[in-house]
Image (cartoon, rainbow, N blue to C red; front, top):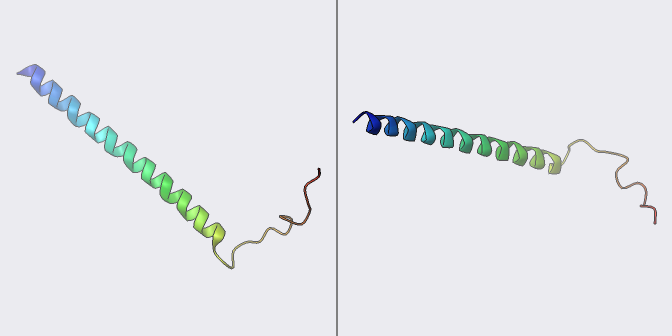
Length: 57
C-alpha cells in the first residue's frame, strides 16, 4: 500500500511539473506574439537606417 501511495504522489508531481512547463511555453509564445504584433503595428518606432543602403556585392 505504501508503494501505491508513493506512486500516486510521484504521478501528481509529474502532472504539476508538466502543467508548469506548458504554462511557461504558452507565456513565451504570447510574449513573442505581442512583440511581433507591436513591431508590425502602424505608428510604431521607425528605424531610419533600415533599407537606406543596398547590400554590397
